[in-house]
Every structure is written in structure tokens, then in C-alpha cells.
Amino acid sequence: MLYIVGVGVAEGYLTERAIRLIKEAEVVYGSKRAVELAKKHIRGEIRVMTSFGENIYREIENEAKDKRVVVLSTGDPMVSGLGRFLKGEIEPGISSVQLALARLKLDLTDVVIVDSHARESYEEIKKALKIRRKVLVLADRNFDLKKIDEIDEKVKIIVLENLGLDNEKISDEITSDRTIVYLELI
Amino acid sequence: MLYIVGVGVAEGYLTERAIRLIKEAEVVYGSKRAVELAKKHIRGEIRVMTSFGENIYREIENEAKDKRVVVLSTGDPMVSGLGRFLKGEIEPGISSVQLALARLKLDLTDVVIVDSHARESYEEIKKALKIRRKVLVLADRNFDLKKIDEIDEKVKIIVLENLGLDNEKISDEITSDRTIVYLELI
Image (cartoon, rainbow over all chains, first blue to last red; front, side, top):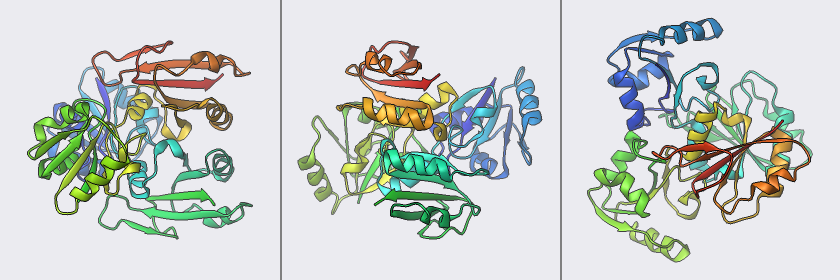
């Protein structure tokens, strides 16, 4: 059996169900960070993933045919996560998007979430602002806030970084790769 | 101090942080269902909420001035939840939206979430389908699937009900008030 388990965005966000799945696993895959967040509950073999891609995903699926395998995903496997790439059961976790909504006191049904990791997202953001006026962008250092200034209408910008961590920061500039940018047409 | 704490959508979805906040609370407010999901961790006074509204919210905020008060919210307080209405710290929880994404193997950044509880949402849904082609609607028995058929283009419909519960069901008709409708332009 293969389970893709969200470990949450930081320490303390594991759910009771996620903890049980991690404890019962014979083999646990995950990035260094994901493994750290789950470590105290892991009893099986730990395999730290240093690269990601189709070959590795197929190998894991094969191994899961006769073993109980868990792949850890930081945050939620279905929020810009590993869930799409692996055939297995998904166990949700608390994502950085949820922390951003909590800090901004904003409901998920009032925004559009855009993923700008490793791709151009400015056109998508413009369209999203048109229908909802409020957008959360999953961003990193490559995201160019100047392109937002080129939008015709006035846009309020709030940058939320390292959500849930000790160095959590809310400002108007991007300084890290763990960044969520809040945009609102005003 | 006032904390609005997500208890998740069903048994087993409480996070370690949520459990700690619930244990430390002197007074715990929540709907019958939310209290049930948190009960084994509650040590303070339980106040089951049977009505909701501005007056009650202000009373709770007053009480929280000199007590440690938790208001429980099923799912996540920022997903069609109580978080918007109360001045306090938000602790996220696993929402039915996350379970729907997990079942459909769909990433949050590929959909728009629309709340159709207690309001007309068909125009909003049409707009959302235009920019993303994929929409999740938080719905109940009042949601009329026939209005979706009136959309010019072909729309695939999947109805997910009672997510996370023993009577979870995936079909093409709405039979309960705990319903998420997946719509996709095809």
C-alpha cells in the first residue's frame, strides 16, 4: 500500500491520522525537511529523497506493491505537492496556504490560489484578479513584484514568508523561497 | 486570549497544535458536531453553540479578555468557517475541500473554490470555469445541478458527499447537505 501523507508546513501540524500512517509504515520516503517534521513518529526504514521525478515515483510505486510505504509531503500533498505524481492514497496536511488565510483572516472561497513555482504566472494572476479581486500566489525569489505594478488597476501587495516558522515575516518584499504573495485589487 | 481552532472534517483530523490549544482552554465553544470531534481533549467548560451571530461572537470576545477561550470550527476556520467573524488567533484544520482534492487527485492551484451555501453562486461558477475550467462548489441540497446543464459548454459533474465519514459517497446527484460538487469544462 502506498500513502502520500501531508506532514504540515511546520512542527506541530501533524494530524492524528497522519501520525498513525507514519507509525505503521515499513518504509518512509521524504525530503530532508519532511522527514524531520515526521521523525519522532517513524519506526520503519527512512529513505531521504534528494531528487524527484518519474523514475523515482515508479520505483516507489513498485516497492509499495508488497510493503506498507509512506511518502511524506510537506504541507498538503494536493497544494503544489507530490500528490499528483504518485498512485496512492492521499492523506491531507496543513499547507502554507491555510496559514496565509489564517494570518490575513481571509476565506478560501474569496480568493484564487496561483502556483508560480517554476513558471510564468502573471497572465493567470491578472485573470484571477478579474474574477475574484483577491489572489494568493505561491512564490519564490524568482517572482517579480514589478510585473504586478504593470497591471492597470491599483493592487495591494502583502508578502508572507516562512509561515509557521520562527522567522515568519510579513512585509512588502520577497526575500526567501518560502513565500506567499497576497494581491488585492483596490 | 481567543483561539478559533479547526477540528478537521471528521474523527482523526486534529493536529498536534489544535489538541494542545483545546487542552489548555478554560472555556470551549462549538457546535454539537465540533464539540464531539474535540471532546476527548477538552478539560475546561464546554458551551455547545446552538445559534450563531454577531451578539454571540461579541460575548465570546468579551469573555476571552480574561480567560483562555477556544471556539471550535469544523474543518478549517477559513474555509466557509467561523474565522472571519471572530477577533482571535486562527488555528487551521483539515477541511472537506482538502478531502475532495485528495479523492479527485486534483491540486488546489488548478481549481477555484466557490461557496454556494445560502446564496446564488451560478454566475460566479460560470466565471470561475472560464479561467480555470475546474471548480469545487461547497453545496447543500438547495444547489440545483440543472442550472449547470444550462451552461453552453459541456460540463463534467462529480458529487462528493459526507467526505471523511462512514457514509462517504461519490455519485452524480445531491442527497445531503455535506456536499462538494466538482465541475469541469470538457
